[in-house]
Image (cartoon, rainbow over all chains, first blue to last red):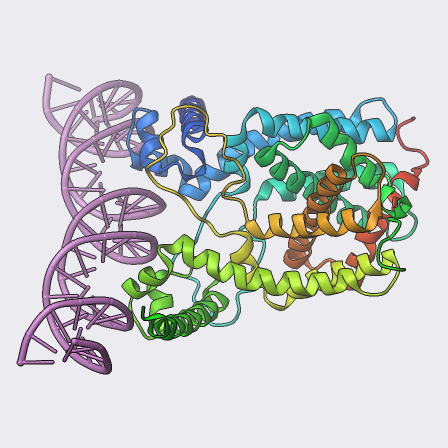
Length: 218
Length: 218
DNA sequence: GTGCGGTGTTACTTACGGTAACACGCAGTC
DNA sequence: GACTGCGTGTTACCGTAAGTAACACCGCAC
């Protein structure tokens, strides 16, 4: 069999693929999530069909591009999560890592979070298509699962630990995401203040806070 | 001046507008977020240009439709938030209200959360466009602000209450949203279990939990 | 009757995702 | 050296959907 030749071609294709992804990256960074396939192809110095040969469809390119950034971000988060410090410090470091990432490259972040996809004709299932979330940003899901794993590994939550860890993983990631999105749009405070506020929330300060004096009586 | 006539026409236009919104609602409920303007017009028994005369563009229709559902959902949430019960019960009721809503009408929920918009040419600001979040789902923002208001009214968080309340408002809403999205996709547990898990998280159980025995040593 | 504003239409343009069919270049083979 | 196969690239096209222009109908004041 012609394995050597195959691998040689494979390598070439992989290199090309990486080049294309880098071009796509530049365009997304410049144009945001609505970057068109034409624009990406032009940036790469080629034309559309090549993109389609490499990535199948726009979703494929999106997936490949997202995987790069998601992997990178997850690696950073994992490092923060695994740091040799107490739990509160680790949580704060993780929040800060995420927020720093979205602050540094908001366009990429937008692309990852709001892919703006839409499958046209095809699935005319007259029933109410219960596929909610299938099209949701995979980044959130992956981060949620990742965090769930860490929580489950580290914490002793008694019976039902596994399920509770997943709930918390997705919940905490969602908290981080929404707060980050809002913060990035309005910049109402420094990153450190935001981190501290969120960590306080996770640390039960909501439950511990006193009622406001003079409020509605209960 | 012909005020009476004006109002008469206005009323007619408003009625038409409401009819169109209801038709749009039905289509979105059936087809999900990728409902086309043509489909909506057909459902309403008219053609596209009328929709455009009423709503400007697709974003306008989206905004009007979203406002309806958002207002309705916010009213429910406010009721849960304002119920005469202790804080934990109110929090659980609020979470449950939201989750019940997205469970009942997932297509509408998807439409609200993933509008899949995209402004084509126009803003060619060569600089990195820092408008992240401008296109984000307004529902999350409104819920976040709403919750922030309630928190600020009710809780005494010492200095910086206002800012902290907003951080928490958006954070909690994001937690609710992401967990709900994940839950709706996978249905890993009952709604009540999810509510309880999230409330536990907000109640500081993350901070209180013990380290897992036999885990990495720290 | 005649202009005029509101409601409706058809028919079009533009843009984008995706594809088909064709063209070049470069191995290896007879 | 011509032939074949394959990967890489192209142009030119299709379908769909957003958005618009221009025209048609209708009720109503004057």
